[in-house]
Length: 342
Image (cartoon, rainbow, N blue to C red; front, side):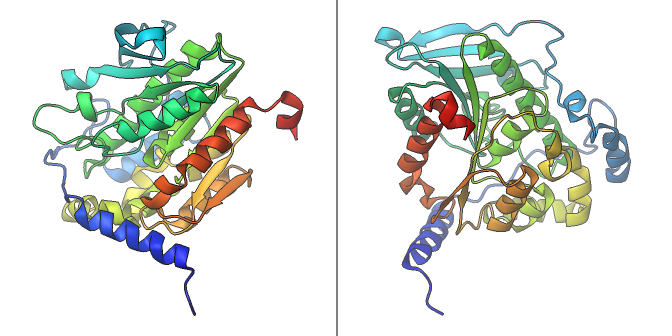
């Protein structure tokens, strides 16, 4: 059977980028690995967390206790096209660097009716690509907020690489990190809700996990998952990008099935039926070895087979399709209400 040339290119491009990317592991090992100050076995944590499977917004709460998120302006371009803020994370942690959250706010040339919050993926070494996406959406007439993921970039503790502490062999620590990011997303959704007619979440790769989890507690008009999936334990076990994390977990005696149980509360395959997103439009990368297609399609099933755009790319070669994706997102968000209803 002859492979599609697009598939050959996509898979080869992904493999080449992967081989050129330094393979790094998390150098922090928590033993014990507590959650909210309590020590659990995996089975005990699953049993405790299972009470939230039918009310996951209580687990992924906003931690604000009725307070309103306060942004602090740190920098701004002439005309306000790009303004930089920081805010205090609603969730306290053990590292001071991670408690302060940088946020970029990109403004459309004219007052916008729609706003999108972009949640990037794991281990991003910079935000240059994401800034290009934000500027493109802003130029189309959409305001965009670009969040900094916990333990990434300015939030990375001294001496760590961007994302080192976010997803790791520290199983319960990773769940706590997901919950922190979800709380930050929820706080930002609430902050902008009153000022815009349409609020959207764009979750890219692992950022799609937390964007989806945020919709368990917040109403959003649109959720745009881009090359993201469901069944987190299986994704961790099979993804090209997480071989080192998997090896460290095996070294701690954690199996694939055990990991799936430990991460059940973070898995849209378990809790995604409670989403409060009014509309979902999914972007699926067909030749992806980092987010394998079957897990992207599993998420599509969780969301009830919503409209989707299939991209003949891999995880890394998606950069060549992003202009198409951004145009599609902008057209969807800016469509008249009668067209959106169809």
